[in-house]
Image 1 (cartoon, rainbow, N blue to C red):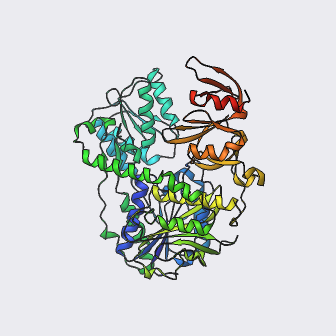
Image 2: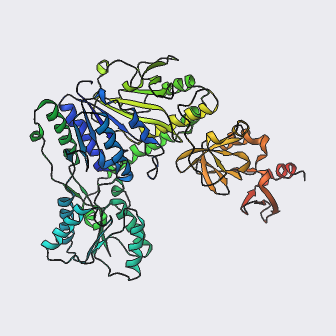
Image 3: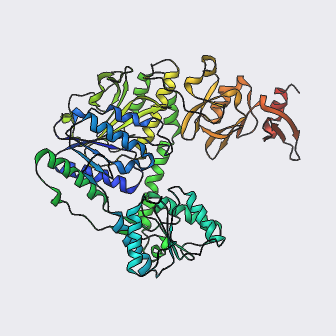
Length: 576
């Protein structure tokens, strides 16, 4: 056991509440002299884990003095909570605290949604004078605390709740159905709709506008979950901002008390939950808009987005021919994980995952020096005392359900990891998979590829050797896939991006149109305009148009236009 090192297990934190839970854990841990190590998933696709939960198999509980499970962050994948609880119970005898609900552990901490929603309902009734109010979202018997808060406020104001609780599930399609019912008069038009999540609230606002029902002029809408989508620039949503950090701090206090007998929970003061006033209830209109803050946020977001969409960075990674070359490339991008004191990128050396080789370590690995170490240590150094690190974040390097290794970033301040770190991990995983297909490294395991909706997409381990030389990478549903070139209809450049079009639709590729033209010119592809490179084998007919261009029809009955500059070459290629 490493003295005073707490293990945190969480999903990708994509809501403000969940971010605040972890920041509260880090803050309390730092004040008590603990190091925290956060094991988390990328969650680039909320509907599927894509095998990312394999990162939790790396946890060596003997290295820690306590465990905090952020069960609340696994709301999109509840089945994982039972698996993780079972793993923790069977594999460690450490103090355990759970943020959220648990059927296994008794020390649980969370925000009080009942009182929060009661306060939000009071606001709608007392400030806006509403009585015809619906509660939308959730499943019957699941969100009892929210329902109770709603019922308490309504009862205190002598308002009947009969027929006012609408159970529509968690997904935004319930918002679409409610908007239809309101528009078509299937239910009495409410004065306000209170949604269980901000995502549902945003979807409801969008669908109401489709039927010319204005928010907040015709109907007031609120959220509840403090999701980032509530703070959009078009229609900021009225929502609740609880003191979620308090629950995180109490979980650390619980671990500390079980270890030392000292109760420090009284040192933490809970802040009263506040209502974030948005335009969706009309209050936001009355508040002064901080233009400077909005511009600063826009600049930070834009810069981060531009940086990680930089095609030169991505192409450099994807063109690396070996792990050594990739290591050197990463070293050139020193600040790619912002504010990290150190960053380590480690790949497994065998199927047992007991050993890992470090291909990059800031301020430690130079040139082609690759250090092999015990993967349970997470870092290619014996201890963390050589660094001023108080918090570690561990993300999986995973592509198509293959866990190649992990990335560890160390911070010397309280800070939750962000999208830039997740995107970086995803790009490294893709680059390693590309190198793997070239035979430069051995993959750590052979997992079956994800199912593809069309035969045009073939994942890496489904391609024959001949097919690998006749394929190109494309992004489908957030996953990098290989597309056999003979299935491609054409490439098109739109708004500084390049898309490949198949019978099933269009998907993004990372090469430039000039690169594609050069790569595929000997495979029947030809540029026919400034923005299009077409597969000539997919053209079934063509005809001149009135503007002296040519309209070519493809096998899917779609059309592309041959500009006048390329007509001669186009006709020559068809031997006309």
